[in-house]
Length: 202
Length: 310
Image 1 (spheres, rainbow over the protein chains, first blue to last red):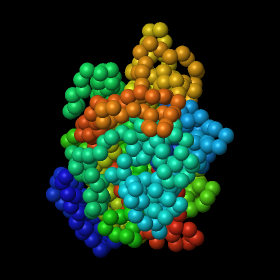
Image 2: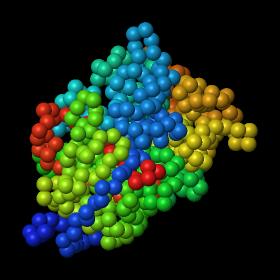
Image 3: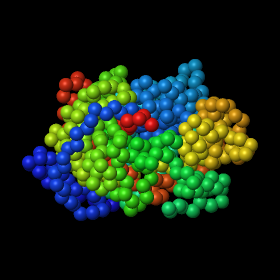
């Protein structure tokens, strides 16, 4: 993986520091940029995303547009879609309701971040869903290298929820769907330790 | 495109069919890549968010990083040929409240086109309005950068906008073998349910594959059509050891029952290009997110808005 180099050039007169940042080219210097003045234009929401793959896994294709134009706290479809999907796979019993439990973790569909939180749990080593499932002691959010699909599959089809004590084990997990088995990643896709942290383009 | 050879199974046929759909007739989505028909078919796909990240800055414990990737599936070597649509507004929305309503935003806008494009960042700042119709908080503009550069803003924010390698990884082909509905290429419009017809019997390439899996049918086939003749018999991701079964010892295997898991090699579809995206990366001092608030817990999501709402 090519390392991203970053050089800050402070332009005192403009009060603006510019940095060349390209993983595939040498550092560049740029003149001060005139900050554009935005007009009082009204913008209407057409796309929304927070937790990855939640819409894809739980929502029928036709419902994606409904979630995209809503705020996550007033989404008209995704809460019911999460429950319906999980109920189809793991029907609720008198004592265990995986559908509602999973919906309580994933709705509203926004990252839960504890700015004062610490490292992710050793069991997963991943920030994604760590705050939701750790009682808030981890930072949460999502880091670039997190296996978010694997974690979501483990919650939907596996025993991830029972493993952290959110609900008792119903023994209905499906091993064939609870992992995607991509354990080794192309090094060129891994994040870096320097801003902007995402890997250089290829 | 590089594809690992997959031989001799139904899954292989399905996967290769998916590959053909992916790279020829119809690109496809994954994490949130090509999320809807409308987003996937815009002339400039920078309205299409592929992934959102929020994580501690690896090199500064006092900072938090917000990243938003857009423009799915940029082929290798073509990252710097794609630009941000100057008619759009991108936002990270942040709520400190249990109600979830945003009380801070970080906004990004683009000016100009091509390699001379400049990108502005505003905030974090209280929004002018909450909800799905917004205006830019112009008083919070602390700076801008040229395309594919990074800069330090006057409020302590560091900002980058430009191409990056897509870090997301997903065995999309395996996913489509049992949830083909999620492939936007299996729909002719956002309102097209993609259901099976006599001329288009159910199978990959049709949006109703999932209805063939009895356990998934109620939630995925909203019209309740009967299963078609070409359904995959068993749902599975790849890469399992020989002999791995859907059911564990003492388990029931859920509604799908007991069957052998796929031993075909798992594959990261997003690495097949390998693909790039356009990224907004905003590193923010935590103090800008905590001062004036009585909790360190925040809820974060990202949006894209246009002047027309389409």
